Length: 443
Image 1: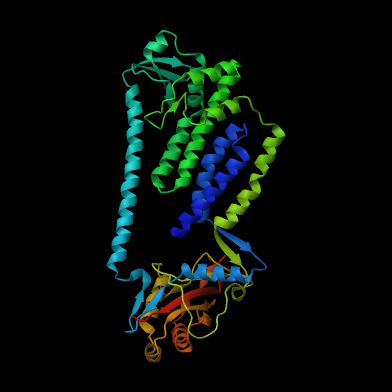
Image 2: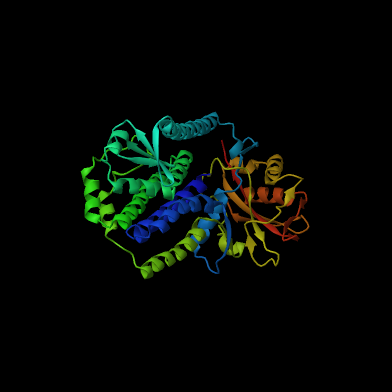
């Protein structure tokens, strides 16, 4: 989950930066309206998508990175000096369990608060229109309210002060502005971003997107007024002469939107040529491809031995990788067995179960060598083994060594594994390569 949140946030931040650099000052407002919410949806989905990538050469530093990345997402088996096996995800550490429960509870409560607030605000707007005098304005409804307020809109409603409307004190430009929001159905965008913020309230990037979405709505509405009335100076004076009050309900679109009035003035007198619009849109293509390569759940196609660094025997300092799910990650062969990949259509099964079943079996078989306990030897071993097409475990080797005694014990247990049900890909049995860390830890 942490990896997902990081990838999602970085992807959203990258696409926001691209918006700021390429599109912020362009008048392609309808394109920007699509880009902003789609970018957020893309950022949420792309870390869940698996993409196969072939890399013919990987530097030594990248090899180490991939090795530790795989290990961090793999099974964690800890063997105490007393000889009992404890899985990191199943340790009876009340402190960790309590902390996890607190985090989940806080997230649920805050999310519930945001959702209830959103429902309350929508209900409040709808109820405020009930029983009020209304006037039909094209496809919208002008709701005449008693409250002294600058006109604002939501959904199919435009709220205006009754006295000002009856006395003709509301300029046509303001009504046209609010009607543009209604006609363009900007409320849908607002509800969408508010729902995302309710779910991802901890992510600061989403608040930046909300600000830009609202700002772009104003650009669109301003363009509608300028196109209709062709009197930019007068319209700008209307914006300046109206009091810049912030709406109490963030869902509504208000004529005197209080952010970036200067930018709104600039956009009214600016235009983007078709050639430039096409260029900046095409510039987005490589960015999307790079984002997919970086932030998706990648499968790096290359020889396993070329990616994973070999380490010398002896005592080594190991990285403490805690709180990981007990599940080895597979680096799967393709049907032509030339390159290993990270997914197959049907994973190998151990004794009718999944990889956790195999982890429990290893727990029951492995022992902490007495000689290693006596010499205070401990550390994390990373093993690599293959479940072949016939379900047999073969090619067991240590790719991260700690000490010959511990290495031999781990290899011996893996080699003694009963047969698996072979994995399948494209309806054919295939060899599946696993990384399997085992941590020997003295207590």
